[in-house]
Amino acid sequence: MKITNAQGATGFWIWTGEDFCLRVYDYAEVDNGHTTLVSFKDYTICHSDLEIVISDLDATFYEDGDKLKLDHSPATLGVDYD
Image 1 (spheres, rainbow, N blue to C red):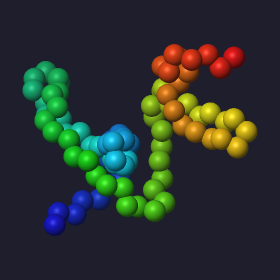
Image 2: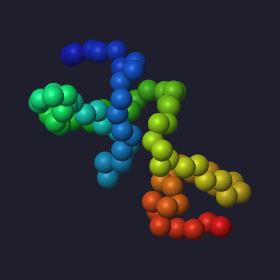
Image 3: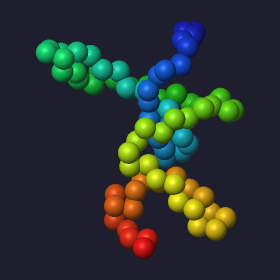
């Protein structure tokens, strides 16, 4: 078993069709600072209180009474909530 500290890692919280996971991409430099995707790994999330920092500019919180959700922006979803 290989064990690596994950602090500072960058990945995407994704829905696999069955559950959520953290997808971590591995890139390689090809030339002049350009990179290409080499592979990715999907990590099952077992951590019970993981701190999350959202850096996605499209991420938007919605509050509708007791319903709270995090989704894409209204523009991305093609809806107008005004």
